[in-house]
Length: 509
Image 1: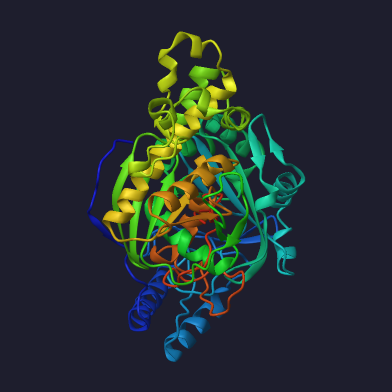
Image 2: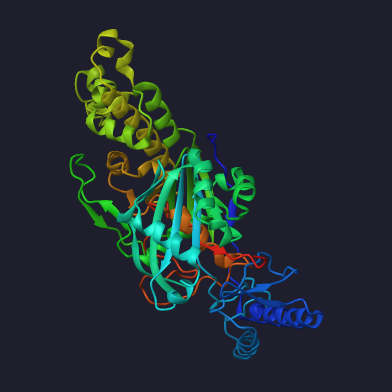
């Protein structure tokens, strides 16, 4: 991604008011009656499951079929009348089984969401654990999918389930369950699609919510290989929404280093993110984007750099012969960048006291590699460590200057680059604290990678076809909140950042 500033403000549309919803309720009821008069709606049963079939799209766009446990035609009419009379936020399911723009309707299982990044793809799966899930087990394919996902930590050669990120007792609309987080290299998308096809995923859903650049890149592949449409959400919208929502999910999600000045102390504490605005988001993926978040409905992309996680991995592959991000990080953990970099003391013989520069600070990244005798002494580990420090220092320097320019004192670092990478997190915390003289706080998330997956799901209330998915709640428990409510910690190591989360049953299956 190119370096540069983009100061165009992006404002996310607010939720509809009660009056607006009432008006839409009336319009949808009229459409319902019109469809019934034309005799289009047809109820069929397939394998013990009722599937609503329709040849007509509704006014809100994305079509999905209603679960036979969710809404029957007669109760739909009753709910519509009651909702309109009470003036509440409940909107009925579409007569054809499609999701509509109210709350209280739960779409059929399975529920998935994807964040398809330039390097890594993150997938979130919701496993219902409430008593209602028994009805879902009627689907043999659905049962097999659950068993396969839960009984394995590895899928194929490169897919992995991060069980330490698992979230229990999470409420999604009317359902309670567990969130599972799975990842695989985006370069293995073909293998993933083959696996999805072999497990019958294409027979269970017509649409999967997705975010990230790969949602555009692989859209045709999903359609061609498994006949699935991608319901796409903007990556940066998902990122911001996900950060806000996950704070409500888990008070302990956000954390910081208690002693950032001590580069050997990795002790962390919970950061209270209940009153976050304004804050700066530094999203470190293949490249880096920096977003100034002014409020719950407004943010600006204020800077970025092409030197990100993709740069680190690419250089490490060239310099050390490693073949994966995990291997590169493992090498860096055993290396010493001081054997590669030129330090302040290498130039001044010690500290540069006039400007407060300690002798151990890096003056020139890879600066010692122009001397042959130094090159002969370095190891693969040293090169990996120096590469990691170089990329991290550059990101930290830009982030500090951007935060200072916009009068922001909280910087939230997220992205796949920080996965299994405590070295960079500690370096970023140290840099923010040192160069700001203690005025800047570096904040991290336990689910920094999964965040975008859950993000696209948190965007659902703003999409007319998906608005029924999220149920507002005022309690501080594991409830997916309305997107207008900030949450205290973000679910994103999945740069879960909390992002894309739902599949929609095809009405034509």
